[in-house]
Length: 321
Image 1 (tube, rainbow, N blue to C red):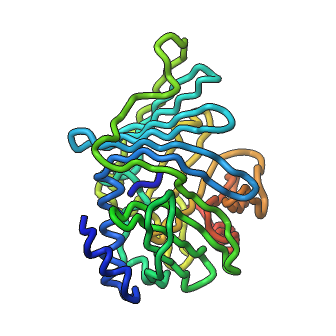
Image 2: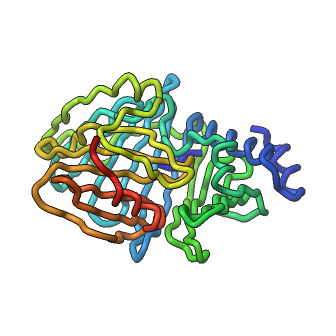
């Protein structure tokens, strides 16, 4: 989820014209540290397509270990708890608590915030371009303008004091808003503490289970590209294969592989399932997500992500080794 001092330098910078990779690198590095090292508790709204969700996130660092809780504040009650090793989903309506092993590289708590300016600048023009105010806090505006039509543009509002992102917006090639995450109130600092689950009560009967624990491969632990049983020769420009899950834990009865690609900001997944029937052919849309599916050699191949549909069409040429 979103995470977030050199305050006097911040004040100095907002009175200048922001440009150049050095300043971008400074603020991105500051943001990544804030996201992982600060305690914060905030309410935010998530707009995607025709849907609006209201959520609360509580992020704490205890003895150097991060814990993040995400609660839904409208619709069906649900809670997701993440630490460096596991993800726990609490669904009180179903009276269930499920814990799965995190399969991503756990050196960084949030995969998105492993940002490298030199890599991002190959695909985006980065500018710090003014000031705004979000959740009654002064912010700096950072804009990521794509250099091609294979990815969307982004605008972040970084808290002026801490560099914590308080708003995140995504725009299509025509500049129309696709999705937005914005804090409406937030507390930052040591006074924020982990209060435990808001949904799991001692007197409420629940069914707890732990899904199959899948140990990350040596390649995943070393953050090196995994070996693939499929040809990915026409990956869209700027995207790289980052992770490979040979089996998705949530579907133990279905043989589904997942490949995750990223350009440093945007990402999409390719799911490959051995099956005797096609589940999706062509394009599909769900809110901010685009999907594209093909049926190849007894396998349903589906690409899904917050990227233009055209970016996902490359899976049409996939072939098994």
